[in-house]
Image 1 (tube, rainbow, N blue to C red):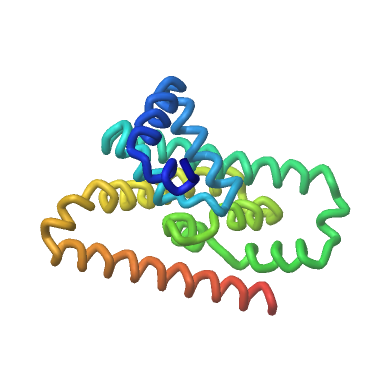
Image 2: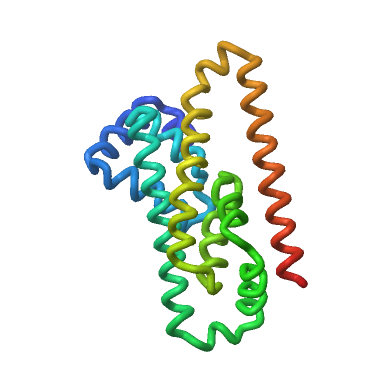
Length: 196
C-alpha cells in the first residue's frame, strides 16, 4: 500500500486517534505547543484535529493552552539567551529587530498573535530579542491566542453546517479572507519599520 493510500485510509486515522488519546491532555497540548516552534505546522489543522477528537470545548482548551505555552516558552528562551549572550545584541539584524519592536505596543502584538495566518515562531523570536516587557507579552498572548483559537474552533466545527448552508460558508470565507488580508498588511508594515 502506497503512501497516499495509507494517508487516505480511514482505518489508519482511527488508529492514530486511538494512540493519540492514550497520552491524555499532554498529547494535544504538546501538539499545539509545537506549532510555536515549527512554523510549517498548520495550526488550523491542529485545532480541527483536536475538535474532531475531544469536542469543541476540550479541543479549544487544549489548543489554547498548548499554543500559549509554546509561544511563551519560545519567547522566554530567546529572551534568556539574549540577556546572557551580550554579543547577540550587537548584531545588526538584532538591532533592527529591537528598533522595530520598540515602536510596537500591546495592541500591535495582540493583533499579530490573534491572527492565525501570522508566523507564530517569528513573532515570538522578534519579541524575545526585544526589550518588550515579559509580563505584558504573556498576558497579551493569553488573550489573543484565546480569540484566535476560538475563531478556528467555530470555523472548524461549522464545516458540516457550512456544507448544508452555502451562505454561511461564503460568510466564513469572507471573514477568513479579511483576517488573511489584515495579517499581510501587518506583516508588510513591520517589514517597512524594520528597514527604516
